[in-house]
Length: 251
Image (cartoon, rainbow, N blue to C red; front, side, top):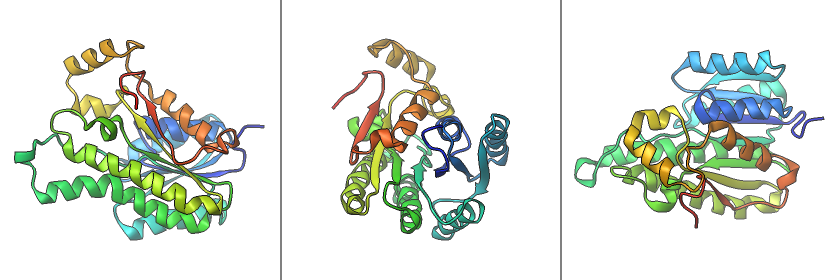
């Protein structure tokens, strides 16, 4: 018997990179997984195909988690497929959009990044919680940038991820009496398309060289932490923001 047998899990931004690894790992642990994507259906289908090929159970749902109506529809489609209860919510949806220094940013850009990272987490959480029983769990995705301010041009992104960390603590306090645990992960340099897009190769190499473990992390290593937090093995862990960065930064 796997640890998450018959649990229903929603993974926002679950179609690629860390989200894909999380979706596949939760399915491997026995969860029925709702894989959410926003723009790239091909990535979502590839994730769904991989889960089903491995014998897992999943559906694919397109939804823009910055829109309240789409967040509500995501929950409704999960319930239509797997029943009324949501046991696990993993909020992976987010991104940097672009690196911009203070002088290059305007309010529209700041709002865009905040909406993508913190509003999406808020909306998915607000939509899911009424359907989450005692013993269920929420796992948010912050970032090392939320702890250390991020690299050059990442102020908006780092601020939004700091907000995710604070939101996690607030929700842990609010939802704890209902038996719902809330934690977040703060990944550092993980080998994903995020860093392919936003981080120069020389910077990645320097960060890896300066990390005690002398390498970048892997998406499946992050997914393993999600699976642990989602399980009863972590039944007394809540309100934590867990660093996954190979020792590059610790608080």
